[in-house]
Length: 265
Image (cartoon, rainbow, N blue to C red):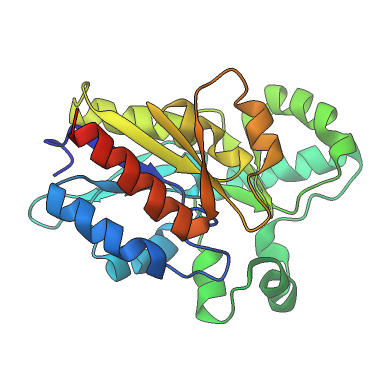
C-alpha cells in the first residue's frame, strides 16, 4: 500500500494519535477509513518496537513504522518477513555519552531506564508489562528533562559528541545526529522511491519538529490545555494548522478534513 499511495499519514503517537491515558479509540474509525482508501498510516514515535507492535496489532496496521524518535525503521515484506533500517547509535554508546554529558555539566541526567517502577509509573502512567516494553530500548536514550539553565551547555556538548537532544512533553531524548524523525521519513521515502507522495505530518511536542518539517502538511495536535507553545515558536515562519480538539479527537477531525480536501482536488 505504501508504494502506491500519493498520500502518507505520518503520525506521532503519545499525545497525538492517543492521549496520555493511552486511549486509541477516537482515531480507530478514521484509520479504518484510511485503510479502505489505501492511505498508509506510518507511526513515528519515541516508543520502542515492542510498544509499537501492540499498537499496530490493535489498529490492524501493516505499514512501516518509525521507533525511538527515528532510531530505527521497521516493516514487513509481502511474505511477512521483517525488514529494518537502523539509523541510531546503540543504547550502550548513548548511555556512555549521557554519563559524559552529566560529568561535563556537573548535573546528573537520569535515564528513564534507571527510574524505579513507581517513579516511571508516575512519569508515564505505565505499569507492569507496559513498563518493561517501554524499557526495551536499543537506539535512543530518554532521560528526565533537565533544568532550562543547562540548555546552552548541552547544545555545545552535543556538537562535540555528535548527538542531539530533543525535548518532549514529559522527557528528553538523546539521539545520534544521524537519527531523528525527519531523517527517518527521508530514508523511508528513498527506500520506496515514492517522490511524489504528499505527507501529512501530525505531532504535539518539540521532538516532533523534524517530523513536521519533513511533511508537506503540518498539523499540531493540541493537548487538553492547548498546543505546545515551544513547538509553536519553533514552527514560526512555516505554514501549519492546529487542531481544535485534543489528542485523538483532534487527530481524527484534522486528518479526515485534510484527506477529504486532497482527494477532491
